[in-house]
Structure formats: structure tokens, C-alpha cells
Image 1 (cartoon, helix red, strand yellow):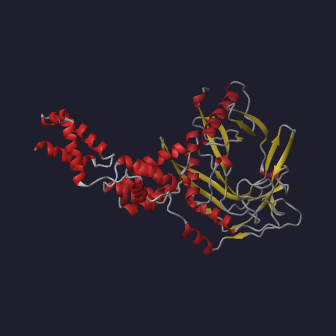
Image 2 (tube, rainbow, N blue to C red):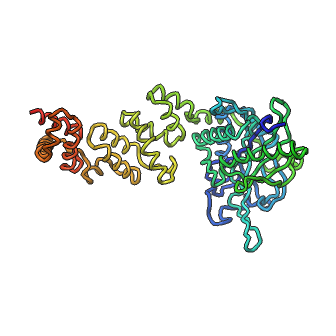
Length: 480
């Protein structure tokens, strides 16, 4: 059977570190980095006799994500122990949720060039992160850092509803946008605060039966996930078609440099982990009051903002997509539009000039520290013709870097446009006297000749003249 007659079936297990200041069951810091094993205590290092206590904010974040992904919230939930031995797992078990996850049966809608599609969310459960192993090839040994041990995670388990790397990327981008708007996670793939395990299987196109799936690990970027899906699907089809063998259910490690994978271990089932309810943690009862509180705190999400921006500001769809792609960018836009009264121009400055500087400096919207007040002042200065377009860009560079006062900066650097008619007239008369050919050409009907005269005026006034005003004044003088 040719490769194109197969369909790829994909489901994701997305692990997200929650943006709490302390760990899931103790008061240790969740800050990234730090001296190895400095953010630890008897609870997160699994010392005998230590007792965990649930972080309330982590619970609120988990429920908030569930509500945002249209999940049912489990009103009576609990924690379970997932038993396995690994050096970065100090207790020899992980506290997780198998039987009663906090959220179930949800969905998110994605958009691709093929159209819109709903991806089911099987469940969202809370669990603690493991530590980190550092492999030292020089000494041929491994060291363990427990700073990350006990950091609160949610695992978002999708249904096997995706059929391509493109759909997977759209799904992960949608999750990242939701989490960002909620402030539930910083979603930094490079720091491991958002990571995905990908379950992949293939089946004949049109079949309703699932093939044998393999779980792919060690994937740290969206592009790598797309390459991994393509590579693993090809491996499975080749095994079926050319080797005439069945696909073995297993966990595989993806090597993005080699664009290939290798088997790590046979895929475990729940029974292999000997799950049982954690005896040290009381069950979670989500009250009506807590649920109402979390619902009240839910933000306006991207889809809702997009509709409002269209109705309230009349912005084009392209502008809206960029502005709502990040919560921080949307916040700056809304405040700038409100203060300046010029929403389209506020959008232009954020989409063109701001995006260009962010690209040059390899920064993200979260790194923006200039105030909407200063951007609004600059926009009004340019709109009121107090500064030229070139000067406005120069001022914005300073605002972007140092959040300086645009008016004070323009005065200090001599960037304000000269509106003194006496000075303009003197410069215009000098331009005509110094450029007799251009003056004669204009009088003879060659209107483009006035450009040389305007340029002379601009140079004479050190770029501080209004070109339009200078052109009108020159035209009047040349008619006399």
C-alpha cells in the first residue's frame, strides 16, 4: 500500500509548569535556575516523615485552564501515587492523579489552512515534576538537581484527534495562548515549562480502527515536533510495508539532529505503576464559592478580544491577529489606543516599529517595558505634525530602550518641527534664490521640480521643517 494511502493519528500529552511562586506540596521556590539543590526541603526531596500540603494557587490555575478548555470540573478529586524508581524521583513515586483528574471531557478549536477543527481534551490532571539529571561525560557519572522536584505541573491529555504536524502545532499554539492569557504558565519551551510527549500511530486511510501507537519523547520545539511526526509515521509505514512487521508499542526518544528515533523502553500501562490513592493528602472538594471565584477571574481570551477589536476599533483582520497573539501586546495596544484616541495608529506602531525592534533585539512581548502613556504621547506628536516621521522613529527607539518622555527627548535633541512662518519664509526665499533652475522649471509647469526646493529648506532648517508646509509656502512664492 503506498504511503499516501495511510493516515497518521496523533494525540498529545502536554506537560505545563504552573506559574506559582512555590512548589506543589511545599514552600520551596519554583524560580528557574539557582544553585543545584538550593530550592529544596524534606518534602520535595522525599525525606521520611515529611507531609505534603496542596498549593491552593496551583489548584486554581488547573481549574482555570479546565474552564478555558471547556472541561468538566471534577468537584470531588484526589491524588494518587505513581510508583516507579528513577534517580531524579526522590520518593520512588510521583504524586499524580489517575482515577479522579481535576478536569475532564473538554475541547479547544484550532485553525489551519484546511479550516477550523475541534480537538478533544480527554483530561487535565495535576502532578509534581521530577528533578533533573546532569550527565557528566568527563567523569562518566550522573548528578541530580532536585530544584525542579515538586514544581507543580498540569498534564493536558488530548484525544487522538490530530492528523498532521500542522494540526499539532496549531493545537500547541492554542494551548500556549490560553495559558498565557490566564497567566497560568510562562510556557518557555527552552526552560522545560511546556513540553509535549507525542503519541503517533498509522492506519489505512478511511479506517476507523486505531493502529499501534508509539510515544515520542525528547522534543523541545514546535518545529521538532513536526519533523518527529513525519519521521515516525514514515518509520511505522516502512515497518508495515517493507519489513512486513507489526508496529511495537513502545516509548522512543527523538533525535532532532539525526531526524530519527530509537527505542527507550516498552510502553508501560497504568498497572505497571501500581497506582493507589496517596494516604498523605486529603481529597479535594471544589466548592461552589471557589468555582465562582475562578470563573470571575477568567480573562477576556483571544477570540473574544478579536471580535471586540473588530467592533470597537474597526481594525483589519491582520492587525487583530498580531495584537491578540500575546496578552502583553494586547494590553499595551488597548491602553495606548485609549490614551491617544488613535487606535489604528497605535496598532501600526506596535505591529511595524515595535515588531521590528523586537526582532532585531531577539525579544518577546513580555520583554517590552515602555509605557503606553509615552507611546500615546509620541503618536499624538506625530499626528499633530510636531515631529517628522523620521524623527518620530528616532524618538520611539529611545522610548523602546529607556521609556523616556517623548516630548522632553524631542526638545533635548532638537527634533521638533519648526512652525515659525518667518523662519520658513526666509529659508524658502533662500531656496528660490539659490536654485534658479529648479524655480524656473517649476514656473514652467514641471511640478516635480519643487522637490529640490523643499529639500533645500529642510537642509537649511536641519530637518525640522514640515515638508508639506514648506511646499505650500514655496508654491505661493513661485506664483508671485
